[in-house]
Every structure is written in structure tokens, then in C-alpha cells.
Image (cartoon, rainbow over all chains, first blue to last red; front, side):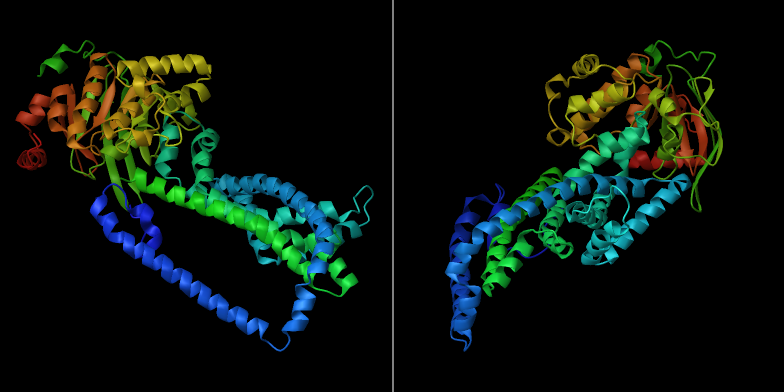
Length: 293
Length: 262
């Protein structure tokens, strides 16, 4: 199987395996050095131009004062970082719940036969609706609607509604990811499991799901980067998390620097996760290449 | 008759056949793959199915293992009609082993786990007991040193031997082999055929779909020639291979011989 279809680029050193042999590697080394150099120069030039345009713009002094104030930054950062703890809680709880709910939905959708049609139908409708409705609206409807019912014993704190809303939204996406994974396992695997006398559920549990989940870890991580960022949306129903905190600071100081601090925090936590995803995708590719030899 | 087949202990059919198939029909959409199969396999008998690709050999095996629902007919295993309504398919499949052309090992499990999964989960054997039995089987087929390997680290021949051991671990009454050497490099075919010969010597009842005519002639008590979803001709191997009666059988064997496979 050919896992790559595009032309080779300088990053493809990894593809020069033992079959390439020493002459080929020697022949390529100057090319690699040169393309690294070209990439470096073009990056410096492009960003140099952009920075030059920005700092020479007529309003730069004002923008610098209201977006990049060092004093505001150092004053606001402790509060903002502390508020991020709420996002971490939202994210961690919603992620675990999503992994479970989405798996249940995906399994329901993969049940065969007319008997399970109602379950398949409901799971499909669920995925359709929660992928169609903008997340903010789900958060609003749950966060204001359910407490608004005034039922006795129902919490008034917005946090649980925030977790539930994020879980409902992301389960719709993640169930699709799981489903793709389940469908990617060749039917012969189920045939082999069933031929040994395993029930349909046992085949799913011991043979199909372990392979499916392993294959979809990179896209799952991608969705979790999205979930991590979307935790700021629950600020709309009154959860004081990082975005709400930076708004509060911004309104107190009449300065936008707190937003820049918030952006920095997200960059700091998201980039490692994105790189991890890349590493896992690469590993899968190498494995696929190795097993199809 | 070759020495192997003649020397087999239980070649005499007992009263209840291991497998009895009557009037089996199976269609995929418009295509009727099996057009009325009648077949009996006695206890300890080895029956080989030969015929061109698409003649229905694999479909027949998959129907016997209930991996494909049938359209009409009856399949009776050791006196129990397995095509009767309300039959517990999982219980039936425990008694019938099948080995596939493409091995179909579980890639995320070690060799030992591949072999012990069904005994542990279906027969509810304790893990230690399942492992002991599996190791004894792996030992018997020269695979004990591969117990901890994953399937992608094994050669095709080793993978297929593990697949056979996996089926044997359920101690099936009947073993179905679906062109088990067709996906193998030529130099790896012999080790798998040796395993099947060993099973035949041990008295395993087997129904084997194969393109290996020399092997079929050697091992089978009876050979069935399938053509367009019917058993066109059946008989002892020396009759089928030396003096085929049906014209289509003659032509098929002629082509096989020209290809140097007989």
C-alpha cells in the first residue's frame, strides 16, 4: 500500500529506508540543507515584512498600548491563569463523558438488523441535530432553559449545565469518529470472531472496538483540541472561566491585553496536543506501511 | 489410493454423518451461487472441494458455518439440524472450526491471545487453563516460540498455522478449510499442508476447499468437483483425477494440468 500520494518533500528523510542505500542519502543531503535554508529565509522575509507594516501603521502606538501592555499583562495573568483551572475541569469532565456517550452512540448506530432500527434511528437523529445546531445555542438552551423550569432540587449553578452541553455537542462529533473506526475494521475480523463462537457483542468488545479505537486516536485528539477551545463558550451562561475572567479584567482596565494573555494560554496547551496528534498519525502511517509490505 | 488416505483409521462412515447437506441454495442478489448442494461427510472423513474460482466452494463453507444465511435447504451437523429456526448460532459455531484464506488473525493480540480468546470468552476456561491448552497445541505445530509475537511479525505460513491452532483450540467436531494456502508464497505452502496432513492422521473430520490438486489427491477420502453452484461429480480421488466422467471435470483438470498444478 502506498500511504503517500503527493510528491516527496524535504521532510521525507524518514522515507529513505534501508532500500535507499548510502548513495541516495549522500545525493540528497545538499538538497535538504538547501531547502531548509530557503524555508528559513522566506519565513524571515515574510514575517519581517508583516512586522514592519504593523509597527509602522498609523495606529500602532494605540494598539500596542491597549493589546500589548506589559504592566496590564503581568497584573492580569495570575487571575487569568487561575480561571483557566475552571476550563481544565470543564474539559476533563466533558472529555471523559464524551468518550463514553459517543461510544454508546456509535455502537448503537452499528447494530444490524430491523430489530434495532429504532435505536439506530435515534442515534442518527441525535448526531444530526447536535452537529447542526451551533454549540452556543445548545449551551444557552440548557444553561438558561433547564434551571428556568424551576423544578425542585435542580442545580442553579451553571457549571453542570456547561459540562452537559459540551458533552452533548461533542458526543455527536466523536460518535462519527468512532463509527468511522468501527467501519474501517474489515468484516473478515468479525467473521473470524463469530466463527469461533463469540457472540456479536463479544466480537465487538474484544475484536472490533480495540482495533477501531486504536485507529481513531489521532482524529479523537483533534476533536479534543476543539473541545478544549470551546470551553470558553460556556462563559455565556455565567461560568467564570478564563474568557469571562479576561473580559472582567478588560472592562476594569479598559485594556485588551488580558485577551492576548488568554490566547497565549490556549496556544501553550494546544500546540503540544497538536504535535502529539501529528506524532501518532506518523506512527500509524509507518505501521500501515510496515504491515502492508 | 495414496498411502495417506488408505492408512487413515476412521475412513469407514459411521451411522450419523458429521455433516449432511441437502438441497442447499444461496444467492447474492441476482447471482445464485449455490444451486442445490447435496453433500454428506462421514465422521473422520476428509472431503476436498475442487473447482474453478466462483464455483461456490467458499460460499458452501461459509454457509456450513452459518456465516452466510441460506435461502433454501438443510444443514445437519452430527444429527442436529443447524438451519432450523431458533437455533443458537453461537453454540453451533463452537462445534465447527473454519480457517480462512486470508488467515484473519486478530492483529491487536499476541499469538497466545489469538488462540485463547474464544476458549476464555466462549468456553469460560480459566486463563491459565486456556493458556496451557493453547501452548500444548502451539508446541504440537512448532509455534511455541512464537507465543508472544504479534501476527504482523510472522510469515504467512506461520500466521496460517496459528489460525489453524486458533480453530483447533475450540476442539471442533468439524473443521472447514477455505483455500488456506491460496494467499501464501509457494515456499510456505508445504508447512501448512503438513499441518493439515497431521490433522487428517489424527482423525479430524475436514471439508477442504482447495486449488492444490496434488494435496487433494493425497489427503482426501473423497473429492467433489463443483461447477456453477452444483456438485457435478464426486468420488474417490483416484477416480476423479485419473478417470473423470463429466466433460466439465475433464476440461477443468486439463486446464489445471496445463498450468502445472497437478
